[in-house]
Length: 203
Image 1: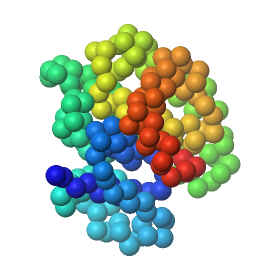
Image 2: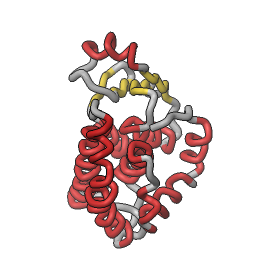
Image 3: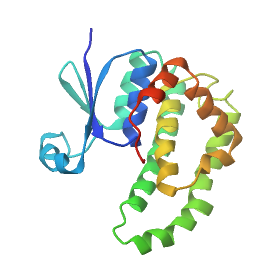
Image 4: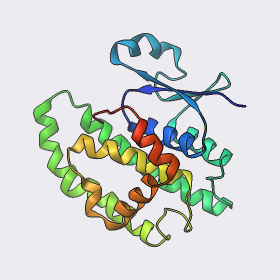
């Protein structure tokens, strides 16, 4: 039996999809949450100075999308063809684009500059992405790819909570298919249990 140890910050972020997938698969995992003062000591010991990292039987994996992709394929959440996997990967890369935009926004040291950027994100940038993602879900039976649950559904749903917290706005609720998609995932018994037991965090 494999042992799983996830190390990430005490936030949802891109660690949350990994937690969700492991929970969905019924796998017990060590959920190590690093605070800022611990990170300075841990950072040089990570493969590329970033989190999350997932240790499986002591072997260290990094890059959130790659980890989710691997776990998805292990637990029956991958595509059933090269074409489906391409569709999954395109959505994952799009979500990564959103993550990069949000990270740049949130890490602005100048609070005034950050607030000046917020309206553009709320009214232009994020709607540009969400409108298209909502349409994809609509056309795929409530999921992102070919009418079925895959790992990229968790990748979006997990990070979307952090995105909304960073923006301080429930932006996903404006899009009915995204909203239903997230609700469907949250009502999966294993995910519902995880959400009820996970630590409460701001983002």
